[in-house]
Length: 303
Image 1 (cartoon, rainbow, N blue to C red):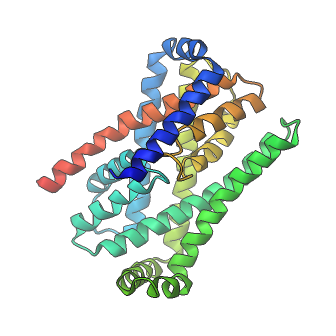
Image 2 (cartoon, rainbow, N blue to C red; image 1 turned 180 degrees about the vertical axis):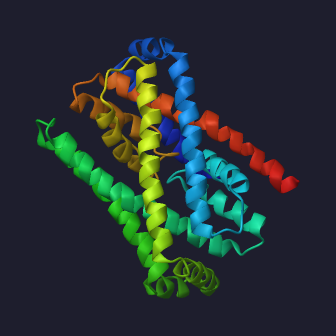
């Protein structure tokens, strides 16, 4: 861990502490202490199903060279690292793990993972725009409209950078002037990605949309565990907006920023902002508990 990681962690923690103090520590503690553990456990089981589904998405991306039982632990450990890194870049551990298991070049698997994230941002772009339309009926002031529009444009920016990097030579020319060695690495990534047919891309995108519904069910069960009365449709719309914030590279997985966004969105739909922050903290904790099972991936490499 270098000084930038430490700075990001301190920044996220400071933002989170400020939000908790602003919303009231006593109220937050009361919400979390009253959790219905059976719904929290059920949410974890649903999240595990989503991890398995994502494993199938990755299998479609890399082809039939690796079994799902080896892909899923790599994905889960990648998700665990993603929660600890700004911009969730730790997820690229998954590419390194899959490359080692298949005996293939790391650059190729990183290219596949970059494409996977590109499709992820494509789905988030569509879903964020739907969410803006949905929440606009609740919003009385212009400031909240501006917040939603800024969040919804973020995945468009991420998607554009990935597509330019994988499917054009523009980034190659820029990188060549700084480091010719990295240009060769990028070309290997691009070559691997271009071999993936459109039919496989369509299947991956459909599975991702199914994953959105399953993950939203996990979130809904977390809300139920906290005694929050919210419609499943509303949680469906929360999910793309809040997960997009997690990619902002200011703090590990958007720590603090996402909790603040959740409090804001809860306020927009006339729910308690403190419940929104507590809700997202429990979503994080639930996911980290399940993704910790991915530590078995380290043992697989040693074996």
